[in-house]
Length: 314
Image (cartoon, rainbow, N blue to C red):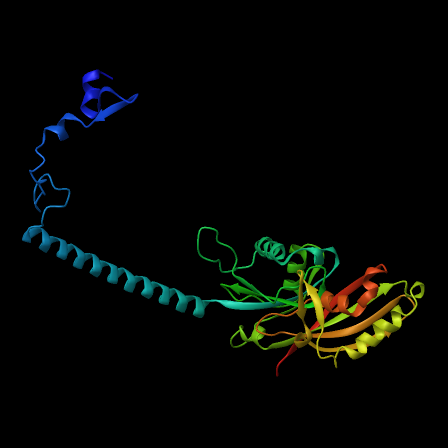
């Protein structure tokens, strides 16, 4: 950088007490102090503000905004008309096949999200005339029963399959579905429900589970008697507090009934009914953890849980 260019910004002359004396640039120094700073007016080319719009430009902008608004309203009306016609077409041309199946074996340790992916693949493999969802990743249109907890087998699961054409819900279709699905999922009933299918889930009041606790009770005196007494008294208890995700939670409102059904030297079975409140319920393993009490950390035991049936409101 040249000295002349540097001098426009700052100049140093002399040493005042060992510190260079700084002076302002030539431009500010040459301007008279008494002359006020010029304030640019609106419309001046040196002003940073936008110049005022003429009447013609204002009218053109208003016309463009009006045309854009009309086009937006027309597009919205056209889009709503297409959606309505498509919904009416699907309502008049779709058939809902409700398939009931059992879930057992090692597939009970598969998460619900993975089970849904299994259904997507197997339904396509079975070559059913299904409706597909919209979007970039189109998939068969299905709706499932409430999610089953991990590690729990079931005898009363169902899935609603949306079809373009009505097919025969007979034994041949059951066999075709069984061949398309992996071991552990076995279909036992097909039907076309009448009315609103959403009432199938909204009318569910509770689930009935069959539970078995297997352990060496003879090696722990009092463990079997304590378990049976807790099974008998859990229905009349004021609160049932368990540890759920590191927090204490009262699950008594979800427990409808609990009754002993079998007992032996190494196995105790009971029936448990859990309520469905606002679309949610509890896991049967939480109740088993409460029933075991202090013995759950002292003894090794295995718990088998199976959903037996759905209990409806009416």
